[in-house]
Amino acid sequence: MTILSAQGVDPELVRLRDSIDNFDAALIHLLAERFRCTQRVGELKARKGMPASDPDREARQVTRLRKLAVDAKLDPDFAEKFLAFVVKEVIRHHQTIAMNADLNNDTERKD
Amino acid sequence: MTILSAQGVDPELVRLRDSIDNFDAALIHLLAERFRCTQRVGELKARKGMPASDPDREARQVTRLRKLAVDAKLDPDFAEKFLAFVVKEVIRHHQTIAMNADLNNDTERKD
Image (tube, rainbow over all chains, first blue to last red; front, side, top):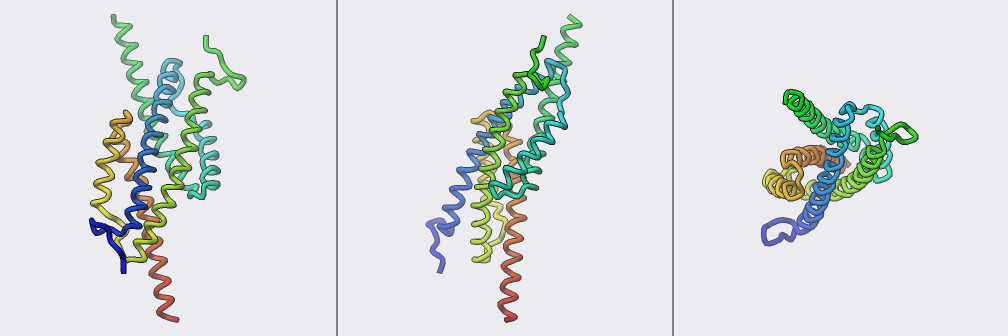
């Protein structure tokens, strides 16, 4: 027989979900901090006219994260997909920053 | 003038990338731990014949993560996309676990 909590949910499931919720909160805060860094990278690249995307850097990141994933017993293909998912968002941010920088320059030239 | 490192990379960019690499290592390890939990959830669900997906739970997670994202100054739409990305992978794992459990049951019945 399965013992259920007051809400009718298996207590082992409740415990696991509580842990998952804690990991998710940590992940969200780490992602927020990562985007603060990439925001600064984007501003730096826009200021110096560097391209938003950097394929060499991304290739190094993929290799490193796949290795870290294997060590942590995480599917390295998932780790690679995760990085691609985050980098896609970062590049979108960088392009927005670069576009805004261009608009500001145009405005400055017109003034 | 921009001062460049020995490898010709802007030192501010190097510092920011070092931080990003540290955040990525932390993210990979947290994701690994999260998947260890969801793996156990999958096994539990398969054992008890519960469905792999749980839309009510997912809706509560979305609401919570969007709020956490706003507090952490992260785009809540990105947080929601991130959760969907992870949950998609988790459901794929759960279905594999359930399928393997079915195969084992079939084998047991045949023996």
